[in-house]
Image: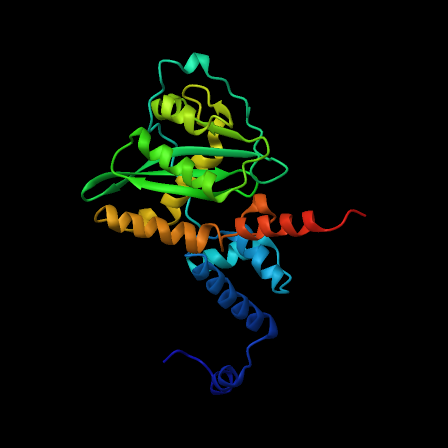
Length: 271
């Protein structure tokens, strides 16, 4: 029926899979495992890094090709939108940080911001404090309003779990929460820095994290209410972002591992 010779058909049945084909299928299985372990978030650069760590010699372009064949890809960031209003005093507030996002030690620069999360019951708000050294989320709180008490609770959590004896910059936008008297009192021993009005790039790291948690995790779910949203945020930050997710800024380590490496190196005796 298909006009195939008997000898050709028998040869097809007995033909062994080539070594190159076997290697490709093995690598594809490894790619799928790494992709699934990243909560299906890693793209070709991070998967290539993980493959090389396991001893596989492969080009990033090849990984990207295999991922396209497998129908898998990383999630991408949606355009940034404004979620807070500037205060009337923004012209009196100064950008001390000036987009210097790479401090040489932990607890030198923190940044903070509020983002909204949609649920079936309405908006809830996530406030985070990030240590820029390892891009680690060191404190976060959840609320159903954007009141000043939320940011005060978050910064107090950060102060309780970190060493603030050395000089420390705290960077935020010019929203009313961050120019309030309560905020000034809570950060009186810190150097306050503020983004320029309507310019999110001054606080790009925390803005990026809030985009990240939405595109990599929250946007996958039809979030029911406050409790559901809280549970999802807890899972992402505590069991993935800080502890497992590799970051190019951290030389492809997790924030926790990057800080541990710094502490280990710092404890070594001087040569």
